[in-house]
Image (cartoon, rainbow, N blue to C red; front, side, top):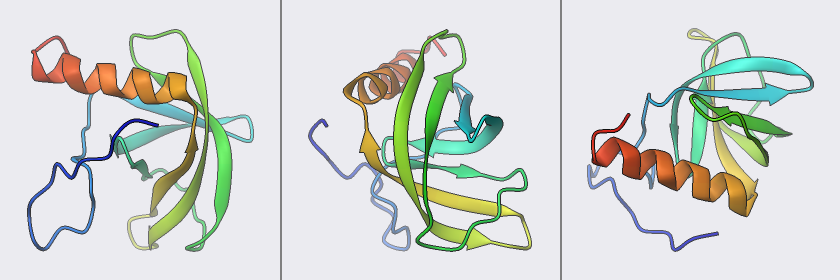
Length: 114
């Protein structure tokens, strides 16, 4: 995995990485696709009915909008909001290809291509 640098400097924010809503990513867990609310280089937030307790481990694949490839990952539930039916996940195992694809998506946003 690449060098980790904190990109969020809000003292009330505990996340290390800046969150993005585009490009959209889809996470496939147990054969079911879940659209992701927001994502970062460190994880993602799912807000479409996933309900898992904190500490739950999942694995699956990620598909980035505009890219036909899928990338394997493993993640841990770190936040859960039952009222919003949202779960925040932290990547615990990211394939080098997923890491590069997410980095490319961030760079594309920065130069206005997404």
